[in-house]
Image (tube, rainbow, N blue to C red; front, side, top):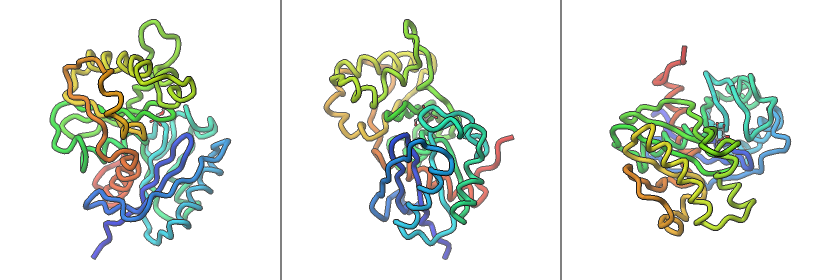
Length: 260
Ligand code: BGC
């Protein structure tokens, strides 16, 4: 019988994570391995690190799904905010496939996390407009309409009123840590983004992901009252690699076509 166990990889600004995922249950079937993202995070260096990850996990399968922190159009990186600039224009799918000798399918990291939440997490069965935000080195976003992904949204790059920088530069989790903001100060910044998204999208749900989502109970009280439901991601910081594995499996079966 064909295997549903696929290696999911989540490339982030600070760490590259991977685990084998059972795509029929959405569960990681091995421990999550994390390797520091090489600096500078050039295409060659990142591809070498993915190879080390594969060896450490001992993956023998042929398909890999990989989340990447940039706009990804048909496997090609179209931006580079928390990764080396030399990625822009690089066909990440081709590069990783060549380096690893496997078939690698690449998508935006937040889109990957969203796919996991739609299949097995907080957005399972959600109808209408749902948004997932990943709070990490940057702020990533994924938008779903009745469970269908609208790929490559970049809500972390919105300019909000009275600010001279994009929102991820003052409201991401890495900024919270760097500036030593307490939860109240940090959530006041995030409230600006959430109110804005609520106003222009009228979503039914907004889900917050990234490692900090597991502390949701500690800062929930600082959020404004919203018209939408606000919840932490269910798959926490595994969502990215689980969604990447699901994407890899669906792409390898041609269930998702090329964008033209
Ligand atoms: C990137 C997005 C990415 C997000 C989270 C942003 O800076 O532009 O593509 O999803 O960081 O990694």
